[in-house]
Image 1: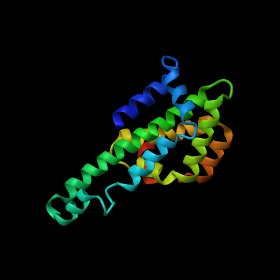
Image 2: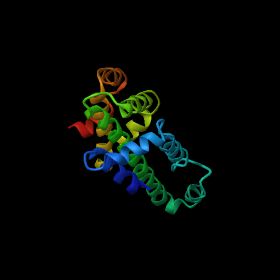
Image 3: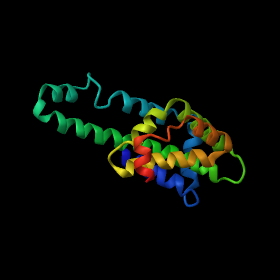
Length: 171
């Protein structure tokens, strides 16, 4: 699933070659419900979820606990980074447009949602050991700043520039 989302994000970023892919999705789901449901599901079934049978097995089997937890973390980060890669591509597309369009309104909604309810996940991506995952988070931050002055101002007010992951990636 993560590979498919990354492919969708790639085509959304390169919208000159396939603009219909992005527009068709945005027309069919202007509030991005499927993406947010997938994000919520990914976060609710992560490695810390006690109801996941593999995680409870890992906790009961101390020898394999770190290995299984690492596999869950890799899976979670892969899907989270793919989702945020799509988010960055949608916002970037709107930021690059010369005139406000319907995708611009959707991108503004997405940017506000990220800034107001998903910053913790963004910090989590910034702190990931895999630099590629952190780069996805940086793409989101860049697209938020490029979208408009209001989102840039809100990001500047809310973002913790002392975040360890951000400082590591910025240096």
